[in-house]
Length: 164
Image 1: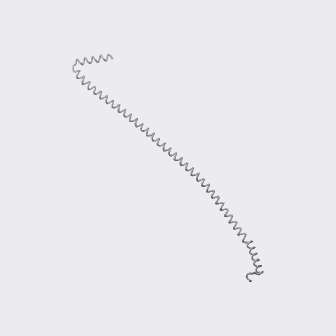
Image 2: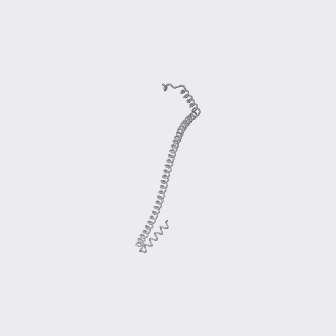
Image 3: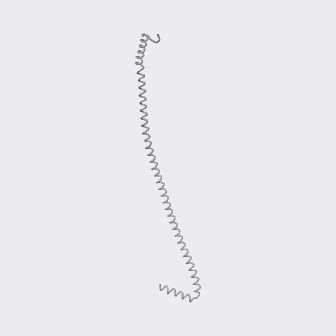
């Protein structure tokens, strides 16, 4: 039964050793352990705060990103609008230049046609005059073979000239 019931000396020394151990742990170990636990707790708290700040920063960046995307879309739309206007202006100017050029060509063609017409009319008049002179010459040769007829014709023309 010795094993089940301890003796007073054993209880005393066990208590003394336990109290010394408790004193030493309190003096040297509990403060560093509690300090390490508290430091760990603070670092975890800081990490949680940093994570919250990072979440907030991400939200701000996402909002800023959305704003930048909206602004980029707006600029793109403005650039496309300006490009369309420029294209329309260029097409309009080209049409106008083409119209002016065609009007110039038509005007020069009309002038050339008018000049050609005048030249043709002058040539026709010249031909008609030449033919008229030749025809008159032949007629006069035929009619004026006789001196009497010549005198009569000359006097007739003289009378007409005096009347005018």
